[in-house]
Length: 546
Image (tube, rainbow, N blue to C red; front, side, top):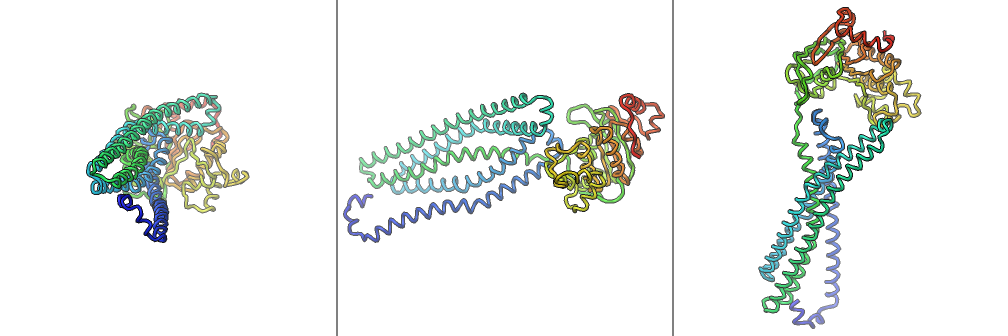
């Protein structure tokens, strides 16, 4: 600039081709720079999204390996949001660090060095102070808004969970005429979310205003110092133009840096939720001994089991039982006596406080959970079905099964004929939680799963309690076929469903108070006999499967 000012006519002596070439080269360089700038995102995208995918998959795998207590205490909606946000957050963090923070720091260093050498160190110091003040202000206000955004994430998870609950329980909502109530509850959650977000937005507006003021003050200070130095003769016009160009050059990435830091802070909040889950360890540790998946029925021994759920009352109080291979035992008693808790301990959802469980004479805690669950099939009271085809839902117990095996299992469960009457057969979508199927059909899907799995231990946890009498009799016949040659545990309220069992355990207040066959227990005239008489008075006894 100074040379041009002192010798304005020198340009006339330059070759027109040289001038044109310089201009074309400048334009071409800018185009190349813009292309390279976009190319870096193209190159980064596969790496960034692959990393995000791995994080999301690892997080889901970790969550699925956590114990039942964790899942009971966490909202499914919140966990879903954490997984989705964590995947995005990883991409944002890597992109921010690699493409913004590092280049901006390098650019700032170059600008300050160039100003110190070419202009003067005072101007370089002002630029550095402006940058530091800008960053400190951004960090302070963004961190102040972090708590609001963290609370917003939690409320968003609750709102997502509310939507899932309402939609999954549509029938209950309709039957109870609580549509307005559920909409009102969802509205309240969104209002809470809105109020928290507005607090964060107010802080964001304060942040933007402060950033603009700091940048304006920095530019004004540089211009004032440079102008004063020019009038004093310590700087040239060229130095002034250079200083102005450099401060404008650094101000654009600074403004973008402020916005990106807020986005990065949000991503770090999302990662904070992720890390809190990843550092959570299951209370139930996996064992190393593999349980034999095929073979005769399984031997079960429980010795002096004691258990309680957290701070609740004691659920099991010194329970001991034995089931020999191929034997069927039933556990009956009033609600809350500990029947289903024994099943949960068998599945290693929890550890007993005291006592030991043995399967095939091996301590349950030493068994690998994969081999344990691979040898057990459950027919629950409320069969869990995915919103997928009947075929997929049956294969869930053994995904590697072939079509012939699937159909054979359905036939054994007395489900095949009903499926073939459906327009799409095995490709019929069952709906959310199997709402498109009847109660009996859902139970038969669960039984087909069990047939396909061919377990050594079959657990029927109130498997027929939600069915009408006729359907119950049909399902009981199928269950009897399924239980043949296997160790079976029946948890039941209806005593007519467990008369055939080799052994019946009567529980009350966490203890086994009676044990024997159906006939033995009736002849004793104790608790079981009283329960039988009470049920006979309430309902007509149904014909039993033979």
